[in-house]
Image (cartoon, rainbow, N blue to C red):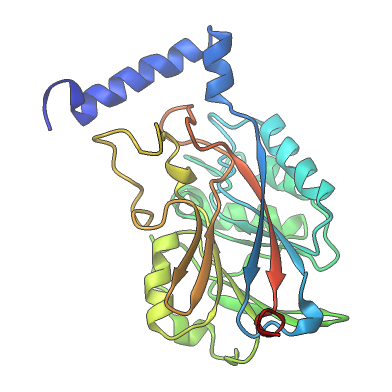
Length: 285
């Protein structure tokens, strides 16, 4: 691609726009659009009627520093708590280029409240920046990090199985090994940072709900389309934002909170997601 539509030229123009945003109130509002709540009802295979209505809140791609501030993350935490969810899932990329901010982001996330716990999986930036430091910071604040493993979430209305995979950047999901203790009849929610991994998981015959992030919803979306010449994130090319069905998987892709590359979000505001889980049995009734 050449001329004024080349990738380099588009990036140069967007960089100028990002710099202008710091001095223009109108552009600054576009640079940091209003945080939104997305409320979604979604069927989970095997979910018993007694667990119908279980509410799961999701935060993703916090990316504390250089563009996301502590105030941004605190706002998302407060908005999440105001939903009073049953459980909270954090689907990776807590930091961006270094693990140095990990203790601070963990401190902020330590304020999250849910009766059945707060759980995390890691994203590609966490591994690239220093996974041990990110894991240590989160677990110190009482947030377990699920790495290719499952947990049983026992409630007074039944049991939900929660799984977490490592980033697709560091390994191909070993679905059989990770889910060896899971039975197909049990309701399963999977945290997987990169949405395109759904193809691998679905090919293994898994029927569950996968929640992901990674794409930032495209981060720069004009009239429903990303800028020409800009490529989607690796392992985030097929499924950009919102709901999808991939084989037996139901999937939701969260647009995230932070930015990478340039401090702009256009056409895809940050989000806190409230997922209300529904029983297929009641839907058939």
